[in-house]
Each structure stands twice: as C-alpha cells, then as structure tokens.
Image (cartoon, rainbow, N blue to C red; front, side, top):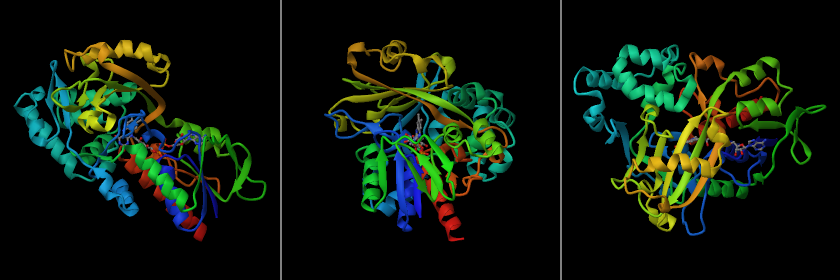
Length: 431
Ligand SMILES: Cc1cc2nc3c(=O)[nH]c(=O)nc-3n(C[C@H](O)[C@H](O)[C@H](O)COP(=O)(O)OP(=O)(O)OC[C@H]3O[C@@H](n4cnc5c(N)ncnc54)[C@H](O)[C@@H]3O)c2cc1C
C-alpha cells in the first residue's frame, strides 16, 4: 500500500514506524522544517543539548514511549532524575512531590482536610473505574468527596490554570488519570526531545520512510476512482492517509467528511499555550526547584515557572541557565498578539519572587513559543464525543491529542494512538 501520514510529531512517526515495518510505502508530510511537532526543540550553537519549545518530560508510567525507545535499542539514552516540584502557599513555596511532602504541606492545615485529601488521593490511585467518574465534573466531585476547602486549595487552582473558562466543566476522569499516571521521577532523552525525534526520523528514513519537511498539506479529497488525493505542492494519490493534526485543521483539510463527523471535530474544545524560554547567566531558584505550581489568584503573570537546568544540568547548555514561564490560554488571549518584548516586560518583575537578587541583566536571550492547540478540554461524558480513528471516508484515519482519553495528552499517548491507528489501517487492509 502507498500510505501518507500528515504530521511528523511523535504520533505520526510512531505510526510510520509500524506501517513501514509491515512492508508498506510511507510518506510523511510535515509543514514545519523539522520533526517532533509540539515536542520539538531548538539549540544555541554553544549548547550540546536542545531545549524543548514547550517544557517536556516523561513519567515512569509512560509505557508506550518507553516501550518504543526499548524497541529502538536506546534505553541507555533515557534519564530519570528526580527534580523538585513545589507548591505555592501564602507567598512561599513548599516541596510537593511525594506523599510525605504532601502531608507536610501547610496549605491544608493538619486536621480533617489533610485526611480527606489523603483518602481521596488514595481512592483515585486505586480505582480503575474512570467511566463512572467521567459522568461528573471535577469541580462538583472534588468538592463533594474531598471537601470545599481541600478542593479550593489543591485542585481548583490546577483546573483554573489549565482550563481557564472551562474549568468548571472538565470531567473527573481527567483528574483521575492525572493522579493515577504521574510519577515523581521525571524522564528525558540524552540530548533533549529534539535529539530523540531526529534519531527516530533518521531510523525511519533508513527503513525507507520518506519524510518531506516544509510540506504543508492543503486538502485531502476522495480520488476520482479510488484512493485519496493529497494536495501539497502537487496532487498525489495514496491508498490510505493518516492525519495527526488538530481536529479543526482536520475539518479544514477534509471538507468531504460527512456533516456529523465534521460537527464532532468542530465541537471539541481545547486551550492554547504561550511559553517564554529564557537563558540566564545565573540560577534562578537557588534551592534547586524545577517546577513551581502557581495559582492564578496569587497574581503571577504565568501559570508555571520551570527551571529546566534544575532538571538537566547547565553544563549541557554551555553554562546557561534555562527557565520557562508558561501559561495555558484561550485562543485570542492578549498574550498571543503581544511581542516578545511586551511579554518580557510583563513576566520579568515576577522573577524576583523566585530569587530577590534577580536583575534584568541576568537575561541573555528570550524566545517565545505560541500554539493555539496545546491542551484538549474533556467535558462530561467525553468518551461519547471522541471522533473515531477510522473516519467515514474509506482509507482516511485521524489520530490526534484530542482522541487521547481518559489519559491527559502527552508524547507517550501520541505514540500509543499513532500505533493504534497503524494497527487499524493494517487490519482494514487485510480484510
Ligand atoms: C505546553 C505543553 C507542554 C507539554 N508537556 C508535555 C510533557 O511534559 N510531556 C509530554 O510527553 N508531552 C507534553 N506535551 C504534549 C505533547 O507535546 C503532545 O502530546 C505530543 O507532542 C503530540 O504529538 P502528535 O504527534 O499527536 O501531534 P503534534 O506534535 O502536534 O504533531 C502534528 C504535526 O503535524 C504538523 N502539521 C500540522 N498541519 C500540517 C499540514 N497542513 N501539513 C503537514 N503537516 C502539518 C505539525 O507541524 C506537527 O509537526 C506538552 C504540550 C504542550 C503544548
């Protein structure tokens, strides 16, 4: 079969790997000039490692990703340090990355609240029944079982930060999945995620996959007789096509899709993200904290501050200290149209709260990355809203972050859904 894949993110590349191994001719169309999609990175000439445009790490529970890396024979390139995560309370930061640390966190006092927090956490770690949980919003379920105060202190800031105006509508299965699958050790690839993406692309090319960079697909239509016609620089016919872009782009690319499938795509909600990356001459968090969770109500101009070089040593970046300041935002938020300088004006004063000695001349360079599609929003009974991987058009498949569920999206699940789509394409072809 001649197969086209739209997108060289981890989903598209994982699908290409299996389809090519099964003996098919695979072409990947990628509009960017590099592979890796949302997990791609960049590098200064004096850095040995790349830095992800949007902060990235793996969890020890990321079986699909770690399994793929094992198959590729690169286990020795995966590192799992244990960086420090902290939580804000009354102007101070407290470690919050183990059960013991959570129990010592002063934000909940030391009475009934802490017991309720502990029991609800334990219940969610032990249960597998997410189908029941998706019937409720996290907003109502958490208040009922963990109590109003625990919810307001611990969970509401997380929901507001990630989902903005939708925070009261997000279902409880999303919260369950987050608590269930996360580990305190966090992983990365030697050299950065971009290094891994490039090595994976190299392996795919070696096996015969054609990866066309800078190749933006404009439309996908049914062929006059059979097959699907892809229009990029020219028109080409393929037997099967897998699309890995956002649902709204999928709808735009394939206007031939029946109305109810298109409607399903367009009704899915998601949040965008704006992330500033800074290289600094000095360490910002002298306590060595990696991840700062910041509740919106505390007045920071961003949701998370992440000091990458408290996770991966600065020696890999020529001694530069790398810091991310990022937020999940609705498309149209003022940060999307602000210039890099305007954003730095907004963000820089807040850095003093992490280190009072911080001065603007610590900043060597600033990069800002923006995406309208960063985080799907799972509403109540979301499993019923997920578009099928096999679309109603014969030979056309769709596998995106928005179909990852109940788990929270991530490169691990991009690999899982990409490989699932490939299995489906192979099974359909065998019939
Ligand atoms: C702020 C942020 C933080 C994150 N943190 C983590 C984390 O810590 N750990 C983790 O594992 N994951 C994290 N993720 C999620 C992770 O990046 C995604 O789940 C994953 O990269 C999705 O892969 P994908 O292949 O499904 O899609 P994408 O990576 O979006 O790939 C789709 C590809 O399609 C291409 N494309 C789009 N339109 C066209 C077109 N018309 N023609 C050709 N090509 C096209 C795009 O350029 C892109 O390369 C984070 C994401 C964000 C935004």
